Length: 380
Image 1 (cartoon, one colour):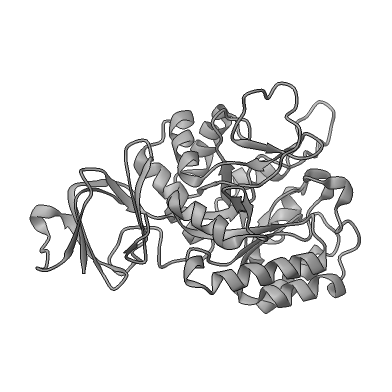
Image 2 (cartoon, rainbow, N blue to C red):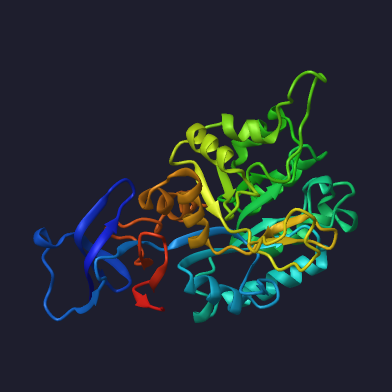
């Protein structure tokens, strides 16, 4: 058994100062204030030094880490993110690849997931195949522009199996509902997300009964559908804001470029504390930096100079969210651990409670990660 002492425990909606947490066989066995919690003799002791101890971070949308694409070097990417506090990650594959490439990438990532070094990888986040090419990186070369055909997508569904946790899609694509039905039949627990889309509220809400419950990188790569020249249209972003059952993913970079700070505060007020998800959307691109972005260090640009994901790790996104919105340490742990784990059905983690996986981080008030514990084992 292991006991963490001298800790400020970060709970879902409060703090426990002067806390202790007991780990037994990779599971949280007990926790509470030190004066009220019985600690067995002979435990290995970790002194948190008065720092915060919170649940390990859960990044459900991440393509890379440390300059390594998940589809190319999954162990290196997973390890980099783990060292930054991300104890659960969903490697994300993108819709600029064709069928055979995506299948090969799934094979590479799945093989790594089955190794001890890949324990923090928990399934696929498929930002593919059927989104709107108008709203994506490498739009001119997108291989999925044509008709939605089961002969094209069924090999992907079959290869993903039950390892896929999220399929991102554009609800306005013709015949997308058949894809959803087939994906749901193959994996009844799968979730769907609206992303890279200009769908109407009606098109999005039609898919919610099948499990559409996430807005992919909310307010990024979405279109508008104005009915009249004088009127702002209602499209993806408004639908995600309106529907209580849809989680909003947010890329929170240092300058508020993906999502402006005022917009972050507005979304937080609309969606509430339990429907926000911080993501990294980390990628590896080295395209030209367009005019006006000089000195920006945490955003990627594609070959055309368009924004293409970030260079963030999730604890840095938490730090930026605190800066831009005034969110507390308790809040950002909720956005980056509890909420994402619930959104994708990983109910055994994401919070400090008895019986949960002992995935934990020790950090200071500014989310600087000092130590990482994965299934009860210290990995940093």
